Amino acid sequence: MPKAVRKVVKVLLLQDVYKLGRAGEVKEVARGYARNFLIPQGLATVATPQALRMAERIRERAEKERAEATARWQSVAERIAETTLYFPVRASETGKLYGSVSQRMIAQALSEELGVEISHRQVDTDPIRFLGEYEVPVRLTIDLIPKVKVVVHRMGEGPEAAQPEAEATPEAQVESEGQAGEAVGEPQPEGEPERA
Image (cartoon, rainbow, N blue to C red; front, side):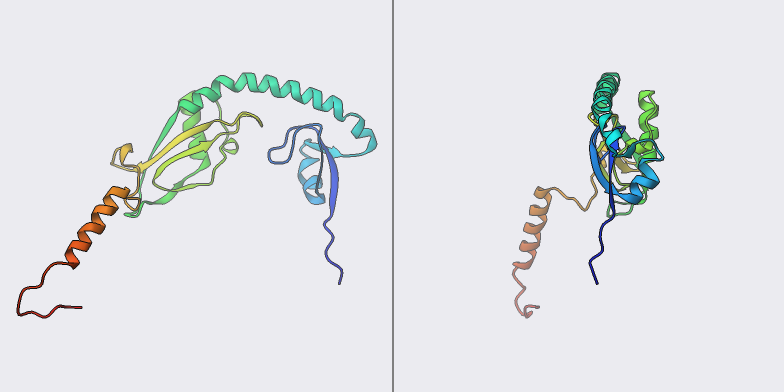
């Protein structure tokens, strides 16, 4: 049997598409992706000779729009980079959360903190499932992706206790190893045999 041939189609991007390309570029994508998502959403068109003649105009227009959007979002990006979000949650002894801190929760907290609408689709992370501090990217534009600091801590404890107990400091680990070594080398009282 012949190998399966990947069915691709060339498309001209009409808008910037995250993780695919910028407006005015020609890309090869799966037919289903083009037919079911890119073309109906108005993000791309099939790369016909007529469409390719428009590519330069699309690229220039997109560069202008991109520059305007970057300038508009720059002050928000600076505020996001300085922001720290705290999430008190219930967690197990090992630091694993009972549930998770989702993209929606981060976007909602960030929107409330800054007074600017941030969509959960702009928060580029998987759900957070452990205690700790995280740097979470927020996509404002294709070029402007600041990181917000997210601190997930146990409910009832302060944010400074966000590091799970499983992640002990190296000094504490050395001390505990040293104490364990001392316990093994203790002399046994006379008259009692050494235990293995």
